[in-house]
Image (cartoon, rainbow, N blue to C red; front, side):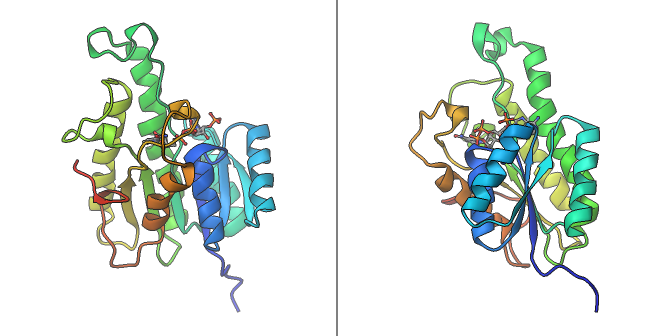
Length: 241
Ligand SMILES: NC(=O)c1ccc[n+]([C@@H]2O[C@H](COP(=O)([O-])OP(=O)(O)OC[C@H]3O[C@@H](n4cnc5c(N)ncnc54)[C@H](OP(=O)(O)O)[C@@H]3O)[C@@H](O)[C@H]2O)c1
């Protein structure tokens, strides 16, 4: 008998708080073993403890999505611990500084753009490509990219934020690229919009709870094999690109 793990394993990046923590908790409640990706040791340990106290089979993975070394080491840890990866939720994201017109397009601070793209876009590519070999070992691998309707060129929601919004537009475009590249495989990739959610990110100035924001990610992480590919979804259905 092969020593194959029955439990499915999910990695959530930026899982120590906010929507990522709620996704980790939700996937845990669905029976996944959850790899809690977080860059800060203390915050990661605390999140793992909280998840375990809630009955989730969780383990911590040091993960800074802006670091090649960190991401490569995280992939090794997941391989050693679980042998494969069933679900990847690319949730880690930053809004970037806005003071002094830093994200006003007419006074745009390009260092802020670089920083935001490094996390929100390059971070997703870095983590996805490091985890793909492990995802390909799963029967029904799923990748969920946490985007935002602020990245929708059709909807153009929220105030102008000329680093953050384009970072999510690019993430949406990349989601489509991955889905095209992986069309002939069992790896299903989609982008999700959580809505406007009360987290540190929004200064807790929003109506939706992290659990509500997590719901669409849980749905896309558990799509059936004939589920949609390369789309952009929220709780209401398809979000316009
Ligand atoms: N809140 C909303 O209304 C809203 C709306 C649309 C989309 N989103 C998206 O949803 C995702 C989660 O947002 P949130 O509201 O939960 O934000 P949050 O509470 O600020 O949490 C962001 C998470 O990302 C992590 N992170 C940031 N940079 C990282 C890096 N380099 N490496 C690893 N982890 C990193 C943070 O870790 P630290 O604790 O170490 O900083 C934290 O765990 C983001 O992608 C965001 O763009 C949020």
